[in-house]
Image 1 (tube, rainbow, N blue to C red):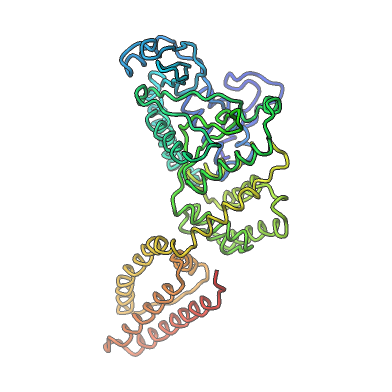
Image 2: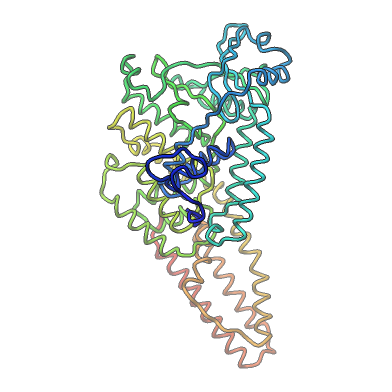
Length: 525
């Protein structure tokens, strides 16, 4: 994975692991080690299972097996937390409280109860001492990441300190049950007008940062095929409904449940869907949706150049060491799907290929985008389980069309101009200082001009981000005009310097003209 496999003995029963007939593979050994290290490291493995842009598929598959389960904390400890947070024993606060937990996870435990008004609830209680343990583990992880980043070139390209920071933010948000309550309330507001989606109510009077009380929802797990068939539920219609739920969250609300596995989705008797567990969520920024729209549009137009720019933007990379190589791979990627109908294409397979290309070029996605891709792949898998004939891309098409229309409509132009204005402003602010440095160089004895195509790529990439070819032309013209002013504004230069400067200005003028000419010749998109 990162070149450290040879440092650890992977064999039967290594480090006290349960012996097995065949030797542990590297991914298996690390997965078992994470389980032994405790809740923080289990959560880390679960997060890494979403990072198809960082890890090979064998590691992703193994980390996906990590289950967030733990032995229950002693009942008296949980009751004490409830006393501290709610001011009384649970039997006083609730009309009924079952002291046997429904489930026990690394961060908290869930209990069944009933309010005095008869509402059935689930009460989640955070384990005592878990915050201190997580903070200590995060400090260790950050120290290890910093050391690895400083000492190993192979590891440095993964930006381990940045990954640990992202993980710390995600995990600390899960520790705060008030944040989970806010997430649930936002989902409830987003789907307030939809009878096909049910979000449990938050009972605020019995909720704190350490205790969360939610309305209890029943129903069948979405992967209980036998139960749904016995209940007469149309599984094909349910597959479409579940996909629409996820796609609506992603492409319309831009706020989505980041862990929609079958244990968090329940089918109601009327065929509607209930969601639970809102600790892990994703939220897409406008800039991310812009790049997504550009990616979808480039795929529809079979445009490798546009797809290259969209993916670089999606990864948040300012520069790419081998843009031509990336474009070449994406040309091959588009070629594999050219002429094929949507019903022949697997969205998960497509995304995995794209993520493999990003990994090959050391482009790493922000956490929100990695979560998005994971959610889309999970949604396709669940829908295919319900209906083997289901095609995710057919369901995605109207959402993609709406997204691209919205992002490139006239009403969206002011917002896009406002963002690109920052790039334009930065370029214009740098121009006077650049010209002053150029004049100083010339006065000190002249300069040599070496132009290589690779050196022009950052300039072209930055100009493309502006999104307006006319602005790029104005900048080029301003640069040429500024050099012309320098040429005519200092009569003290020696003839040799004037000739050299004239040649340099001529070359730059020719370059500017060439850029403007190619911009005019490019087809409008």
